[in-house]
Image 1: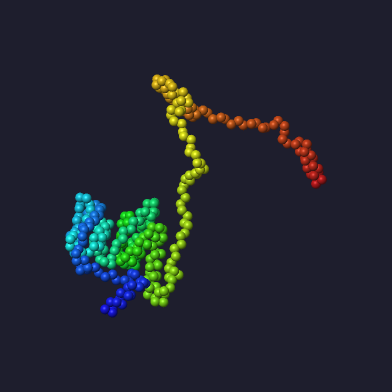
Image 2: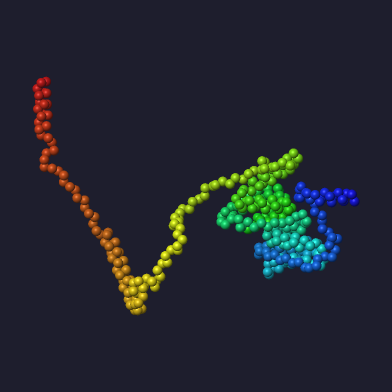
Length: 338
């Protein structure tokens, strides 16, 4: 009796680590009268899962029968249904069975999905398509979560002790509740353009720090990696659209066909007159086009203009005769002196 009283006193006080608490198992003796009402859940599954569900459905029924849950597979509607019976004594097992069906429909293998029926194991289906609007960015970030040859995903599984499956627009996780919280944070940060390695490193550092009793009551912020967002230059569009200055007034409404006809007076003409006018305009356009074609053809036969060379030769002698005579006299005197 004294031991029981001491246990109750310790539980009433504040708990330092809630994850370390052990929840007592719920037994049939705790609920001898069963459930008052029948609960039922149905989950749709895609066409490509039909063959796998057919093969593993006997195992699914066998597992759920142990918990007094009835499971139905409807191949026409494409749905999985679970419901309680009069013998069902656990009120929460129907929620676990519903999650079990959800995981099977999300391509999680039976061996991993069946773990959800355990007390300390849960599941989380994270929608990731709402974080990014562009499809290319979404595919890149989803691939970043998986990593080369699935290395990043495997490291997340080892650190969180959860089975993680990336399928389409969702990420399915099965494991302990503490690990599910960590998986959700990693997935959401990755889709928000924070590399998963930052979270993986922080989990590894925390695991090592937990072993050190001296750092137990200290802040671990100085050991954990900090993510710094960088302003990476983005690709500029080839064609830049220059926006017009904002005006509160709407643009002037263009003239309608009737307004144009009223302005030209064509609106008041009869149908025969309108047809004749259109025919005349059409003929004029044809004549103009015909003339333009003829001019284009005649261009090949027009001879080019000849270049005129100007005769700049003058009748006056270009040589200065007086200077030439003086030069010759000077040369003659020079020969005589010799």
